[in-house]
Every structure is written in C-alpha cells, then in structure tokens.
Image (cartoon, one colour):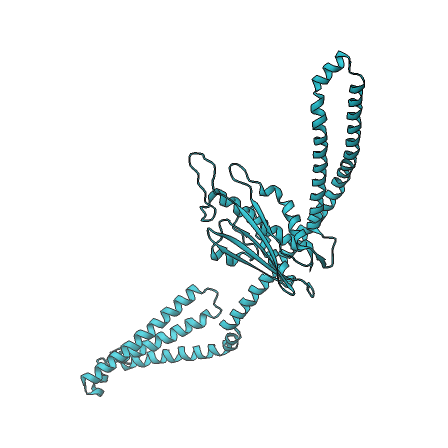
Length: 434
C-alpha cells in the first residue's frame, strides 16, 4: 500500500511524456498551448453555468447544469495533467483524475436521460411568443369588453336620468308655457281697462295719481310684456334642452334607425352650450357649422351622439388649455400688463359631406394645442388619457372607436402640435348589421 501511494505521487518509475516527442520544441509547445487553452475554456464554461443558475432561480434543471459543470471541470483538469506530465511522469495521478472524469461523465449521462422528455416538453421561444401574443390579444379583448360594459352602464344611467328629467321638468315647464299665454292675455286686458279708465275719468283722485307715479305705470306697461316673453323663451329653451337630452341618449331605440346626423350634432352642441362660454378675458369658443346636404343615415343615434359628445368635449378641453398655456401659431396670445388677450379666436369647425353613394364624412376640427405623434397613436387605446388623475377615465375615444367600427365605419385623428386636431368620421349611409 505504501509503495502504491509512493508510485501515485512520485515519478521515479517513468520517464516524462516529453521524451515521446523527442523534446522537439515546436511539438512540445504546440501541445502545451493547445491543452492549456482547452483547459482554460473548460474552466470558463462552469463559471457561466453557475452564473446562469444564480440568475435564473426558476430554472427547473439546475442540478443537471451543476453536474455538467463538474464534468467539464474534470475534463479540463485532464488536459492540465497532460501539460504537467510532459516534465513530470506522475501517470498514476493523471490516470486517477481520468477515472474521476469517467465516473462523473457516466453519472451525468445517466442522469440526463430521464429529463430529456421533460426538457423537450418545455415551450420553445416561438411557442412562448405565440402564447404571449395570444395573451395580449385576450387582454385587449378584455379591455374592450370592459369599456363596452362601462359605456353601456353610463348610457343606461343617462337614459334613466333623462327619463327622470323629462318627467320632472316637462310637467312644470308645460304648465308655465301654457299659463304664460293666459297671463299675457289677462295683462293686456288689464292694461286696456286701465287705459279706458284713464280716458273716461281724467280727474283721478290724487291718491291714485300718486300711486301711478310711484309704481311707474308706464314702465310696467312697457316692461311686463317683455318679462312674460322672456319667461316663455326660457320655458321653450328648457323644453328644447330636455328634447336634446332625449335625442342624445335615445336608449329607447333598440333597432337602428334612419336619422338626420345634423340633429344629433345640434343636440350635442346644445347640451355643451355652457362649456363653450369661457371665463375672464378669454373669448367664447366659436362653433362654425359647414353642413352638407346629407341624406338620413341608418344608425344607432344614441351611440353616434356619444361619439360627437366625446370628441367635442375633448376639443373644448383643448381650447381652454390653449387659452391658458399654448403659444399657438394660429391662435396668438399676447398678454402685457394685464391687457386683454388679442387675436385669440378659439374655434371648433364641424363639416359634413357625402363621400360617395353610401358614405358620409363628419370632420370635427379645433385650433387648439394639438398633440404629438406619440399621443395621436395611442388616442384610441382603452384607458389612455393625458388628463390628470380623476379628470378622465381614458375610455371616451376608445368607446368612440368601437361605436364607429360597429357601424361599419372608420374614425381617425390627425393632429399637428401648435396647430390643432381634426377627427374624421366616415360612416356608411346604409349598414348591414351592427
């Protein structure tokens, strides 16, 4: 046993391997360089494997990689021993290292066989990419469905609100409108009676004359008809507003219907009338209508009105922001020592025209701040908004896109920073189904 250990670690019984090469420098150095490089590469591979296992803690076959690392290290060590035995004939040590390498190699090969089917079953990068694409598509459909549910709920709530308004407001407004005519007739009769009384008795008591002067009867006779006329105009305006709200929602129409698009636009503008009025020194937003001679359009009126509402609301928001912070080339703002704004002319232009025998176009353009190309690309994405948190849901334009798409039409946005934004809606006159 002692002799075996001595033979294992000593080189007295053998000659160095270099003698086999006759110590030719070219042959010796070629073997040294080759074996050294092979050993260096073999040692670097396990380092990469250990780093990979450390970073990918979820990798399912970490232990087999560690076995490969041990196998490769042992292979590299055999090449280092080939360099060593060129001068030192410790062949027993070299053989022992080769035996260890053989054992590790055999164990690695045996351990590898059972996991090959499991490794084959792992999804490939192409399969993962396909699954990821399908997941994105499913998520997109889920977002669209959620947006549609929110839209349906909003429109349902609007319909209930409009029904309540129509019931609670129309009755008193009808009462006022109907009685204003009677009050006006009674007032005329009373004024005629007063005139006849004054003509018939020119010597009125001083007390009556004093009271007539005190109440300024002449002014009352002139102003009261105007007040009654204003009351009637106000009642008519309320009636028109309620009618516009009903026309806007139109949730009672479950089937598509032929309607005048211009009526929907006008109803929406009437609802937004108060938003067109600005504050301070800023002029009111001007609406320019350039309506073409359109036929009646087969559509869901309430849904299209919602599209108009979303676009017009965005345009109004943009113009109000423009008046505060945008230095536009079209809308020039000049503020000097609290002077009023000059040359500030916020506008929304609405144009309609017939494109061909079965297509119409609605263009809604504002001369506000405009948007960058990046924002324009995302304008129809669900939940995308440039407004502060709490100021918008980011669903308006996404819902508008879906509504126009369901009508068999197209909607696109063209915007230039510091010049304005244009929404172009193209819908068929007759649609097959929605």
